[in-house]
Image 1 (cartoon, one colour):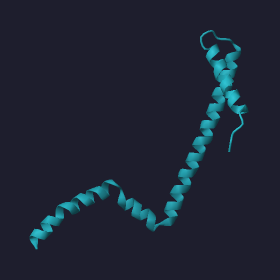
Image 2 (cartoon, one colour; image 1 turned 30 degrees about the horizontal axis):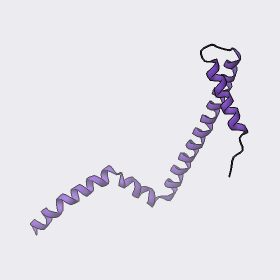
Image 3 (cartoon, rainbow, N blue to C red; image 1 turned 135 degrees about the vertical axis):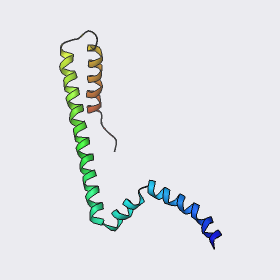
Length: 98
């Protein structure tokens, strides 16, 4: 009996270590508490949405600033800015296939 217990002990310790590293207890807790799972998914979805909107606003601001800089005809970056603005405007007027 002691030999069987000793043989099973090492794989059980390994399995326990894997479960501990995988945060299995937190997963079981969330599955048994659906309200917590819904709350976490709601918060993560909102943060992803805010992140996308924020990135869109920052990108629009950057394009606007680049257009304003192109007016000054800066010798080093003027051509680059003009080309970038042309690419963005062409992309806006290109029809998309669904």
